[in-house]
Length: 89
Image: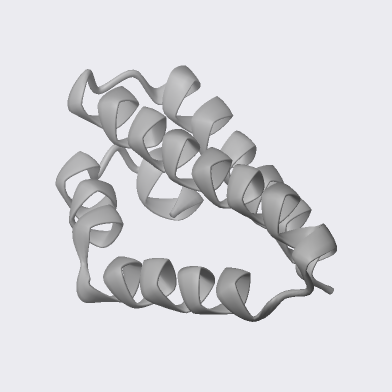
């Protein structure tokens, strides 16, 4: 997404955040969360929520067409995804 943020192609970033891949990501993450051992489920649920909060923040930054904020939010979203991966790994 960063390439599209850098080129200020806001519609493309927002389109990718709303695409069918995002719905697949949500359902896959929820399925993984349900299959985790009980002691990991709470942390995974919190990390899952963080990913989508960051994704919504990125979407809002793109709606406002604020490049610096969008770059920050994209970085935050990637960090949240990495944290989620660390929990389930």
